Image 1 (cartoon, rainbow, N blue to C red):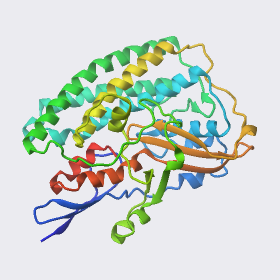
Image 2: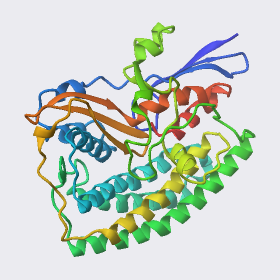
Image 3: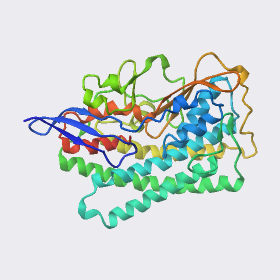
Image 4: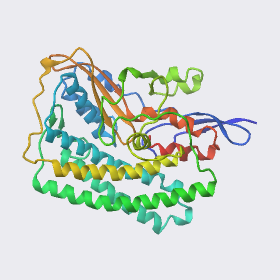
Amino acid sequence: MAESVTISPTTRHEGHAKLVLNVDDEGIVTKAFYPNTTPVRGFETMLQGKPAAFGPIAVMRICGICQATHGIASCEAVENAIDAEIPEDGKILRELLGLGNRMHSHPLHHLLIADDLLKPEESGTLRVDAIKLIQKMRKAGQLVVDVTGGEGIHPPNLVVGGMRTNISERAKAKLYYACREYEKDCNTMLEVLETLIERYLGEIGIPDLGKHDYPYIATDTTFGNRDAINWKDVTEVPAQRFYAAYPEIAETATNQIPFYRGNPAEGGPRARMVKYGNFKSGGGAMDLNLARALENFEAVKRSLELIDELNINGATKITPDYSKAKESFGIGVHEAPRATNTHMAKMGKDGRIENYNIIAASTWNFPAVEKAIEGYHHKYAEVIMRAYDI
């Protein structure tokens, strides 16, 4: 007899959610629901009427892991709303800040999926060695955020108009050597993940575990490009409308669901690597974990390029001129570790925020997770879900 399986809360991932799975007599998921259960905190309403400078300060509190990407997208949205162009070295430092966030976040996710791939008898030396490698990589990523952003949690150097201060020659050298070490560690991490994922898929006999047919959405490889997609093709609906036919799900969901050209889309590492790289995905969810490991290389390679380009004596900031505020929304886009992160700001000529909207990166992938779980046994549901790092 068909039944419902509920996993609440889901574990070892970034946010707060649950899985409700309708399964058939064989345990195969016929319909999956993955509602976000994070309490509504009202950041968009909170920002209305506030000075522009408060925007990035506030939104960096949205997430304890993705603080830099929210701050970057917020600054870019305000700057776009007043047609402000920040100095080149400010752009370099800002991109480095975002890359440091990615270099810190991706290895953390490698840690969260480790117990899906390791066998119980491998929980000793192999697991400890993997954790040491992951923590070493995260430390390097955090150093990039600390140095460019001023501190790791809510980087104060990130401001509307650019970056508050440049860095010293010594700091630049520290970043260079940390990134060189990170580059070496990427190879080891990729080899470990490739071996474990190949073994896992071979043992369960499902090479395409978590395959779905949704399209991909991404705007850039390492930063973000507001001109890469037509924003008129992006819409959002409340979860209550998305799950309208399932009131018991709708009443617990708290997120908006974004659509691109009328359909859900997958964002994040695989989307970026497929659209802008040469990554050949078989479509299964484990490809997300491999794409994330490959993005470690992309992030550190780009970081090294930016460190070489940075002029430590260059200007990094302008004074914003809010008298140039446009009637339309400014758009700020940053490719967060998890997907395309978008902030939209309508500014007043007095320098205060008149209206604000956020399409948080993770919200893109909730429908993708549901679709990816359907058609597979419910015992794999959390493994598939965790691959998305929501």
